[in-house]
Length: 272
Image (cartoon, rainbow, N blue to C red; front, side, top):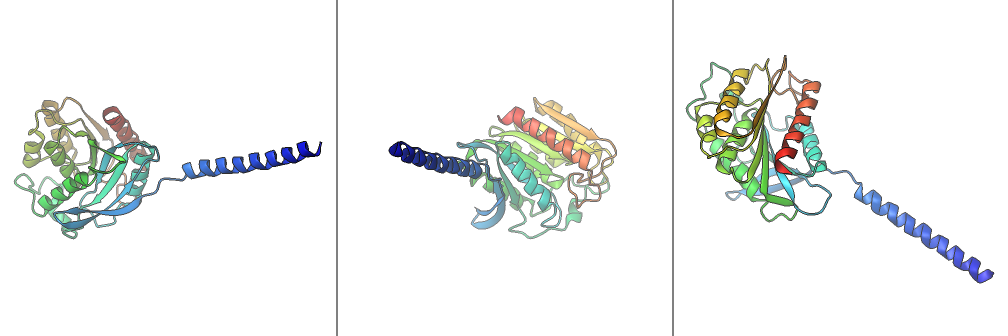
């Protein structure tokens, strides 16, 4: 009986060790996704970014997060939460800090009010910013976790302009655009009308927005009726500008939660 008892004991130790290893592997796989700081080059200049990568294997659709005209660091908490949420949802997410080369602009020149005429040409350095956003996408071409044939862009306020322009340049790879309280002017209209079919676009707008008026978003929606096969607009009653950032005067947690759910649903419909 002694040999049997020894073998049974060894077997118990082996099973216990195996069980511990299994739990260790499970714990490792369940480690939370965290934003990773990085840089890419735009015309030889470094540009800051952070990205979040899904834990599953293979290539994943790419979502670029494009901030608005606000102080650097504004909304970092929310942008990192969005980044993680996107990666948990199966997307390779990247936040692009496109002020890296130029420094922070005077946001007054982008004031989204009816009395400020933005219909002629965007003031420099907007062209630099646009090239940086393009370079962000190009930097992912050889990334084994990113599918460079499937892009989406989420833009906020003035950042929504760059997403619309970028989508007009690459309508075959940009599968979806999400416009948070952006606006349209004659130059943006020109870009939206440029491709034969503009990518699917979701517009999220508060009707009490004092910086990007509701009329601007309605103009964009009307334009998309002519140039996009798929577009949606959702209007939040009584909601102000930048409603999904807790630092903003118009922060509205209910609208923020609903808008993000709509964003994920829209991306799933067009990227997966």
